[in-house]
Length: 281
Image (tube, rainbow, N blue to C red; front, side, top):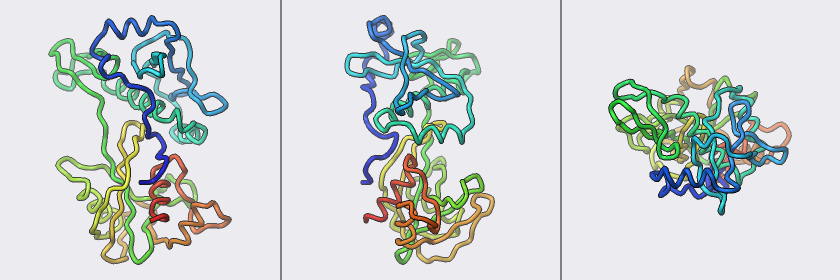
């Protein structure tokens, strides 16, 4: 398994057993030292050292969990901020706080986007400390969604397939990725996405690792696969380019050498960890 998957890890004690007890959550909100996550520009705020910023409790809408003996809450953070600028903030976020950042960001985003009941259309309210919503009209309960996304490396003859999208920074290439569709196994999603985006047929799909990705709420599922041949037919509606890179080219890019064949994904992306895993295999 690749080491140090960013956003992964235990984070806070989520204390699931307390979510269904409103009286206990109210007691925690009144506890000395209870704290609230501070938000800025559409994201949890960071201090100069990259740690999450906390303040006195004002709006205990979302119960994030317990840090030792300290109850931790968050408001439903306001939406805002440029996505590119938000990604830039991740370069400063500490790995220890990353799981809390991911949970708070995904949970807040879900609440902002799901204020009405999907069953009857009536407004819903936050329950279970923010880990679900209940409709006051039909009593349907709704839970935060997670969207599975496969992200994969196809390998052929000691080389690996990477692609780039027009929105990427110059020269950046990364692993191909796509959402898992309804009624589809992970292995089938990997094979389908590689064929749709690059025209590559693969076998021997293997799971490597996963990563919560809170923009807005995906679960990245990293895999590898063996390509039957190296012929490419690129879907230019999805990719600007796709190429096979040698092990030496990948190693140079990951090491940040001068004038590499491509620019590697940032360390907080699971594509970076997947390439590191491939190099070490």
